[in-house]
Length: 237
Length: 223
Image 1 (cartoon, rainbow over the protein chains, first blue to last red):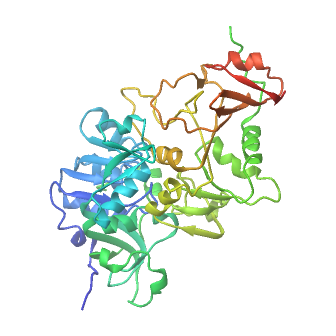
Image 2 (image 1 turned 120 degrees about the vertical axis):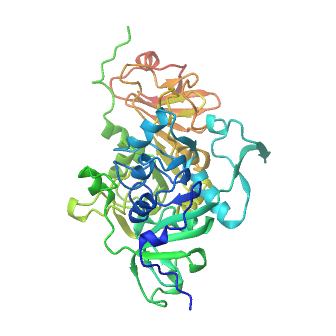
Image 3 (image 1 turned 90 degrees about the vertical axis):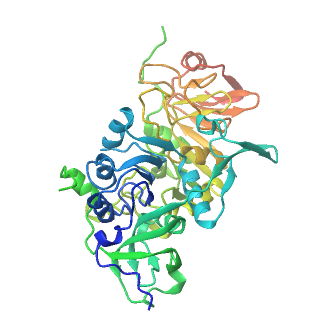
């Protein structure tokens, strides 16, 4: 019997190794798999390359992973956020690398990685500093730059409901990078608010089909990042 | 000495109203953070406009009451919003397919600088110690059919934001169609930067003084 359900967040992230590339879902706190990130902090590996749209807030979740010096490089579109001090400080001190990618290019690079497409051309960033050093080509007299697909060793994603096959549905704008990150990682690790019986999600509305998912852990009362930030909480507690 | 009196011209609200009037019925629109967000409050009666927010919602509605806020239902500025009946959620690759694939009709963005050729700079001052952050701005200007900029005409220091050539790093080249400022509405064309409308009590000469490039007047410009 196929059963991708794992008993704990600690067990779910236990295979993540030093130097791994890890995609982490979320746009700000919406969709950020904070319990999986905290489990990764407890797990303690380092030299990670993290692909995520932002760099976290306060001293919890992704910001705490960065503050704990586990991340060598960030690939993201918007490393500045309200209450984001951890990344800017390390970046100014030269202690963390940044690959800045336009948000749509980041999404498409992840989608391409998951779809077996090594590279593609896009008009985004043409004539800007972010196109410097990139191969470009004219199609129909318009210039496009070459961008490469991104693959990861692991992805950490939050969803609303999952079943034992790994079929997922999401909640509102927390979906953001989740579905594409599940496709682009060798091992996709999901924290689901609720695990339900196979068959309870109408096949017509499955967002992420289970083939893209490897491990699911139920976190029924996920913490809200903004509340932790407001309370000035710091992880590890 | 340039007069830096900020009491003349349009307020932020009036600027947002001016943009709202120019958005056709049935448009799919992406609004940037800041003054652009206010445009949604002034859609004229009888028109229906659908707002896309690039983090994954088509059919963005009003800001909710505090007790109805959902931290997982937010806009691109990470503020809580609502979804209208008939809205849809989608992942980022689909969201940017809408944007980069030319499916969004109008994007209203803020600016640090706009050149007379419609070059836009709105993501970085290029300062050495700045943390670069670009978000979806480059995707929007590369893919959306029409780009409207809404901005104060001058910086807080009084420097022009409408310039001959942008000194800040570009977001996109030749992408802006219209510029709505507190002093005027400007249109970018191959023949130059034209004044479409002047704000109350703003003369063409005054506008020129506050602008870092040459302006042209339409014969029918409203004064």
